[in-house]
Image (tube, rainbow, N blue to C red; front, side, top):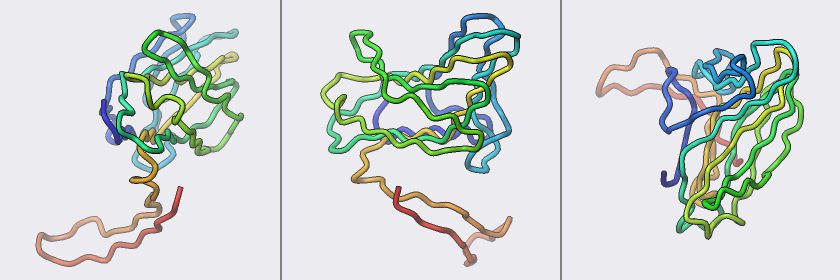
Length: 177
């Protein structure tokens, strides 16, 4: 994939290839209606069984070629889970990008990818050690060149219907990331 890569789960639809693996059949990757951005869905890696388990979800190959300041930012939260994000290099080496803080509410993580600019491609692994019925939610995954895409819109309000050719009032908040 090329940048920007934006995956937000809107309408229970993925824009990119994601796959998962778990230590037991009870570990699954599901859609969750508990999402960070209000579009209705996030991805949830969960252990439906008892006892400890692990699981992860990987994305397809992403090229950072031609970027100046590549970053990944995403929202996440955890429940009885220790979560991390890894970068997988073309030679298969897994590099821990960050062990994520425990978060009972959605938290935004923004991570620098400059050390991987010269790789042919990279993949991301969202990993969790899950206790009992533990869960790791992740949403609004954005991989981009931060010089070009450093603003985000929040709290967008617009009427439910707008007729073609008509004007409409739109209220929003724009923030630097």
